[in-house]
Length: 214
Image (cartoon, rainbow, N blue to C red):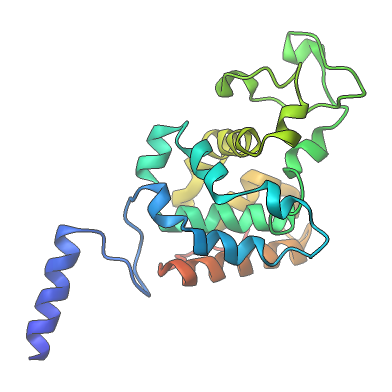
């Protein structure tokens, strides 16, 4: 009887993704991984005074992800765990506008951007507008007023700067996002990111892999 069950499990793994504790992650559609329950478990941890709990929604994330079809159709549970671990750490469980915007405010350089910078009253939402098909230099407020645009900008950064190092382990993604935290720069932040990552891997039923720290 036991051998029959083992054979059945093996067969199911052959015909489809085999996701469970201690496994690696097979490609799935992003909407099948980022369920409403998974998203709610994160955003519901934001404080009661966080107004962006209403602004940031799972549907906005899925809509944004579908603008990157290669990502939306090839993403894995481990990648989602990695991505949402960083997002949770950077935005306080989706309580704040993307952290990239806060860092880059007032740093526009027309010689780098090769186009006019936005007025100081509007701030600056960073680079990457070309890949989004949006002019975020002239309309940086879109990131703060449209959740799908905010997620699209974050996904553009992830796909171009972080996804290429995923196979090196979670620690490599920390270095790609904020290398100053590595090598003792901010061990508390690194520990927090790893904690979120392990938790989301557990929720999604996937092994976190090796090389978690940087």
